[in-house]
Length: 420
Image (cartoon, rainbow, N blue to C red; front, side, top):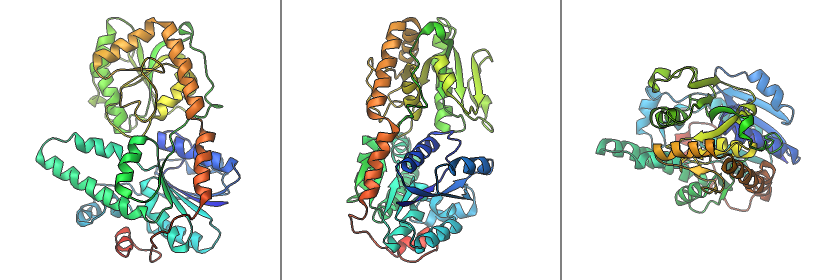
């Protein structure tokens, strides 16, 4: 089957959660015999040549266009306050991408369209004009919903309430043009289903590459005296999690154990002075690491002190697969049916978190048991081939549902959606 796959991200190197998911889905779909025509958006500082060279190993054709980032102060973004749709949709619209998608659909050589994440949804809905079944992969509303619930004061409640209204109204209109939507967790399914109505919503969790992420049995004597947080500080929720750890948890640990915090991922352009003060011996910022696995398996514990966000955590599944025990907040384990004291330790206050880290530091048998159970959980429920097999069956089923017809070929999101 000829698949047109639309991605907001350059999937390789897979240096964030979105890229990891897209990369593994593409690779598994290709292994199942599909001919994939990939179009991705890229940022200015990304090595598209190396990325395309690798992706060409399993994609039939790869094209790319520059991503237009959302700049809230830009005049287009300010004008978009008057739009019924999210400001980011109007101000980041790329006419060249819409035209190219339309051209490929008009050729008659595309059997299915997979639009990945909400950024690519508008371009994917063009498929309904040509009678080509389209699928919207990985919709996430949970992070925005949680953020809105936390707002204090009438001004912020009104402002972000309007954001929610625009976002859900946009998704509601889009959903009519897709055969099915996918989400990563039950919470996301409940939120999205309330918005989209009759469009089927399927749970396709994040996964782990079990061949790449080989299990290393836990032996504390073979590990370095460090804990690891595998998440780039350029993402604000990771920055918030590390700041929380350094400010609230690390001081409680310092008197009882000397454990360095290793933070992986990019941090260029990040205001490190905004983090709580730390000594170089206490924290190591690795920057981007092409192969993070040795760092995880060398660490005593993977810590996930996330306070906000939605979806499910690839960093958690990665540590589970590799055999490194985990201490996480409830938010960090959200969307994954891992149980406290069976697969990991869950801690939601600084003192609880510090106590949990110390338990694993001191109780090697507990760490071994949790790590072994966690690996079994990933093998059972979060193996990429099994996950993509379900996606493949959804895609292959094809046109089972009558869709709203998208009118016109080009134009802006506003003009197109008003016609439907």
